[in-house]
Length: 138
Image (cartoon, rainbow, N blue to C red; front, side, top):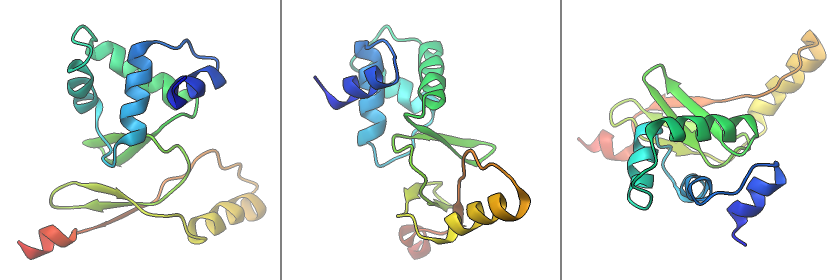
């Protein structure tokens, strides 16, 4: 059994070839593809999968905590196969989104929100915007 199939079962989701392929794509991708790109990539193996199915599947995966939605801006929404918190670097020129390893900095804010303000943090995202090394050269 593939790891993706085990993950789907662990959150009580029906295992289908399409769901397994979508989850595998996101877990293996270094990119943070949007819905349209996920759809184009899945169509190569499953030509009958509709865009609506991709939307529904991504929403379901997000609700079950299998992936996270990465909204770098109102027009740039992608999906990350790593649901654990980690900061992202966003290039303002080419729009590439890169993962960074987590440090202590964001956790301190979540702790303060809880202790000082009584706020129950459910999720968090951190984006650092700038220019990637390649765009700086051009």
